[in-house]
Image (cartoon, rainbow, N blue to C red; front, side, top):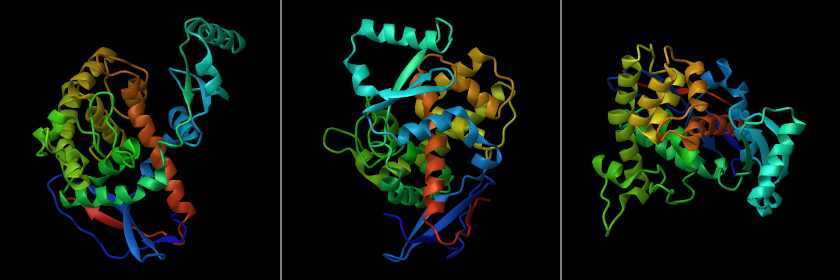
Amino acid sequence: MFKGLFLLSGYLLLLINAVGQTTGVIEVYSDKDSSYSYFVQNEQLFFESWDTLAQPIFWRRIMSMSPDSGLVNVASTREVLFQTSYWDYKKKTTKERLKFKDSVRKEYCLEYGTKLFLTSGKKEFYNIEKVMPSISKGVEVFSELNVDPWYAQAILLIESPGKLAYSNTGAYGPFQLMKSVARSHGLKVNKYVDERKDFDKSAKGAASLISNTCIPEAVRILSKNDIEYCEDDLWFKLFVLHIYHAGAGNVSGLLGSIDASKGGMELIQTMWQSQWGGFKNASQNYSQVALASMIILNDIIEENSKYIYECYIAHE
């Protein structure tokens, strides 16, 4: 789909807000239909070696596998033990599954209480190329509203808006907004209309949620715990994503339970292995999936581009 793309400087897009950040954006030109698309650079992913962590590596592999296959992995670290048939495992009874996991622990010399997962492939859900046009639209909407477009790209990669599905908690639309959250950020949701399915309106609601709730709450929580931060840092943005997904109350409670004293990659990794209240496995996975999908997006763009230049969305 994206063969024949190349990146060029095109024009310099400058948008001003009161945050004081500079977000790098690359402009992609397709020589097939003479169209332009916009994506956010993720240099910190590689400079800070986030791409070498076990969790993003694990999810990249899961995103490349069909749902009939699965990876047996250690839950706390996402260390992959081996690949097997997911369908065969699903056919087992509860007793047979317990016996299977016990045999794996014994074979790999793991402690008896070590929690194991068998995670199925999710290639059909995380279709990065299919979602790229939506990412470009999201980047533009967030930029127009003076909100860091990195968040639009991250959320859309995680939620894969090619499918307008309801989550098991009732979230809906390309940015997976809950009804009450959508209403509080300007969207109309009632028995007659649900604006969460409208991309632009959903994007505006998500941008409002990020800028007016999630980032301020992240600042409040980190300040309360005397943790230094910079809003440009990748770890801070991942922290904000956790608030977007799990809510400020759960993230605040989690930080209190782990007695966090400093930020950075170490804090995010600790959050990946900790639970509190509603912050459970899905919340732990949220930023892991964001990292993995961004690495894949970067690979797609680099592999299918002739030239790479930069433009910047500058925030005053």
